[in-house]
Figure 1 (cartoon, helix red, strand yellow):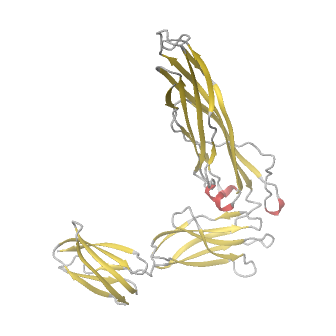
Figure 2: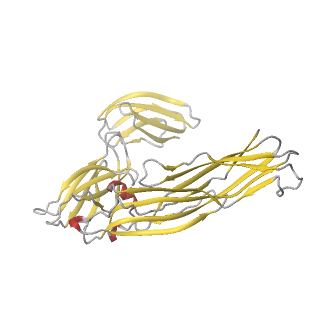
Length: 400
């Protein structure tokens, strides 16, 4: 028995499909009001050999309402377009093949990949006569096509308010990756042979938002802004036209990438006093750069709405903010601290060939200037490392 191995071209696409589940009911909006839906539906045929296709759906515009759940499923109809087995020997043989396939969905709201993986779909045996010397025809040749070998549905319902934030955006889209990875092993008993399979897929996409109108769930956050008070500290400020008849609270959040947010503090609604809310945030752990902020308004039901995202540049004052002084220099290398810093620093100075010219530790105790070395003319780089937290800065130095 001679094994013949062949692989069906991978089909990588982005797909979603929703089938209504009778066990899932539309959630009620705040105050017992009924929710609505916004749905997108289409059907796409993926031909043989397609390696990548993008399917995108509009994100939900937060100004038009609130998303309470996202429903998505994938239903795939896998088709074998053509199977061919050819016997090249002078004796009758039999042929068969085993079909394997794996379908995977990736995208927002899916913590682990959604996978449907049928395996070991066996076909045959098929009788093959002795070769007739004519390729692709006769009793020594077997073929068939348009055989549906797979129908699978994978569904997901997302209701977590933090995850749902990924689906907001007035001018953006949400994308899911659906990958089909199919292969097969063909076997013809004895002698030489030819075997191949081509496959395709038909996919229906349905993507749905469960929604509440803005009149039901008002966003009481107005004039939200972020101001840098000091190099390492920002103040968040907003006004809330608070509703005395609906319960909710405010939650300030921060992010370093603009997508993944963590909570820095919460404030209850305050209708009896000023409608102005304030909260401060200080950069920590040696992290300097762009910080993103937003305000989250959460209801007792768990539904949440979000303000626009604001950003500000911050520097951590726990790390020395310094300049090399003078720079350019006639040979003397010194460090001028722009903030009051106390700690131990490791200093390394490299030349343009990457060779270490200076390596030393210094103890800083609130000094504004420290002389560290004398160098010959050239271009250098100084690396300053906080011994305690290993935070590092690099500056260029020019010696005339």
